[in-house]
Length: 185
Image (tube, rainbow, N blue to C red):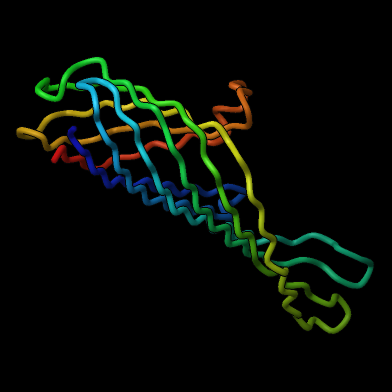
């Protein structure tokens, strides 16, 4: 039985707002271990750590005497999954397309703060938001394209998504693209 290990990374950053004053950063790290009992089929275990930071430079009236001027949200996720992966070509091929489907448990830890300005005195007060934790059982779907660099060592490109049950219409809401390397031992 062959064993494959993989490490991949995903990053995106975007700006939004009328003057691009708001920012979102996403970092995801993936580690994977696959046991390959048959030449094209594998049982794969994944761990993904993610962090999303949302920075919003806001200016809107919250009450008659206060306005929100800035907020920060820090969302950390940990996802553990077990998947059945099917390759369409053998490990000796130059290009290896694959698909996997499985179960995932995602833990989300959400915290942050809001800065509020008193409109009469101009004083700014920071209001910390308590951490909110969430646990979800989800379906994971992934498509891979692995390009052989040398025997057993591959450049790995993948698109992965998580969605509830088999609500495939939600798949585009959690789509992430990863790039990394895998090695068949």
